Amino acid sequence: MISPVPEDFHTITPHLVVKGVARAIEWYTAAFGAHELLRNTAPDGVSIMHSELLLGDSRFFVVDEFPDAMVAPTTLGGTPVTLHLYVKDVDASFNRAVDAGATVLMPVADQFWGDRYGMLTDPFGHRWSIASRIEDLSPRALQERAARWTKEQQS
Image (cartoon, rainbow, N blue to C red):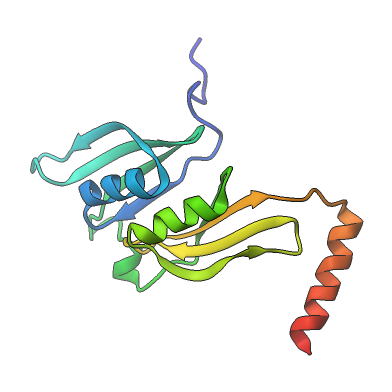
């Protein structure tokens, strides 16, 4: 019997549309340490209809923009989606992505919810948050810290 969810996949798999998949694969490899698993070109022999990358224990797909069907965040002028990446060393991972050409949206800092966390945009318009857990909090402690943080922001 065939499993409805392939063995090597998690339940949700991000599917990123970009302009220039070949460059994006190189960038995700250099910036995040992703590994290319598969690449299928379109009949034109140039465009990439499908690629699979492995980042840690998770796969994600990267495909070329096809304006009649799928467009990249750079075409749309941005994205409302943030991809969250937990890593062992957030500072090293974040700096590696910035050195590879990512734009910093929020510098890495310790956050009230127990993560050391920062945000950036990759050169293809996708937004990433990168974090390392530094403290486990109870739901009550998290609520108390969130309330304090909200008060500080309003002051």
